[in-house]
Amino acid sequence: MLTVAEGKARLLSGRIVDSDSPEWAHECLARHIFNLPRLKDRRAFLYGEIDAKGVARGGLLQKRGPAAVARMEATLMELYHEREAREQLVRELRQNLEPVPA
View: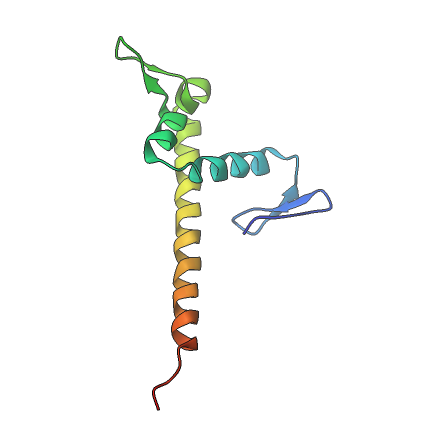
């Protein structure tokens, strides 16, 4: 869950860091990518776009390299699993709130 207070931020791992830390900046960027509306946009952000010559241009891969992309992919998977767990909890809560047949 995204939490920021008094210059501190809680990471996905639960660890508290300064809100100006590189770890927090990484997670914010991951959330931005995760919330892009289309898969095509998320892939372009990570890997760049193919130009007329068939070469990938831009994207995190060109700017920061394969290690940064691998780290971002791992964080994106964490965000995905967090969302799935939250949605499952909501489904279970709604199921428990349904009226019991008389």
